[in-house]
Length: 114
Length: 113
Image 1: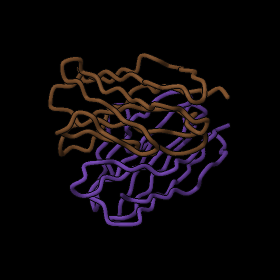
Image 2: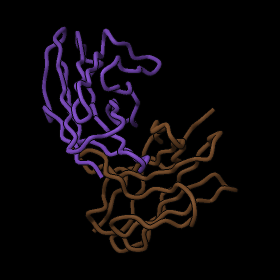
Image 3: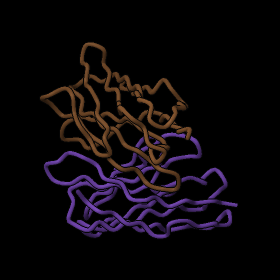
């Protein structure tokens, strides 16, 4: 299994600002993903973070709002841009490891936008 | 359409009682099935997974789940619940090679002392 850490663990931000969330995996992984979990709801996949190329976004999510980087096989960032209160959510990073075909999740970043 | 349904939004059980959380799925391909647990303020922890083979799978913390293809179900069970099991439980389905999961809406478990 992979151990995943995220920074920050939580933040309170003002509308119109941007926040970058970091995700670090303790081993090289094939796939990395970013999810959003809105209050009281399930997880929604934002995008697949591709190493060395542009992320692949799911329907309803765009690069201008959620730019993602993945410079290597163990690290990725998600930026929530021009935030509004509707962006208040938990943002989770996950990683898929090799042949296990299983995703492991980070502890999440709890974001509150005022 | 691909979907995962967890019919029970909330479940309350007494400590020591047995537990069953329901999960039904609709998926075109042969599914990979997962159960995750999210404790308050925490991320998701993998409880167990089913890819193929024995339809009864054992997981961590004394949980097990049974895959029933004919019923498109993957219900999670525990014979005796502990107070520390209070959390939210998510069922997820994926396909081989994609790593992309569809999550259910979750079941929040409350345990009475």
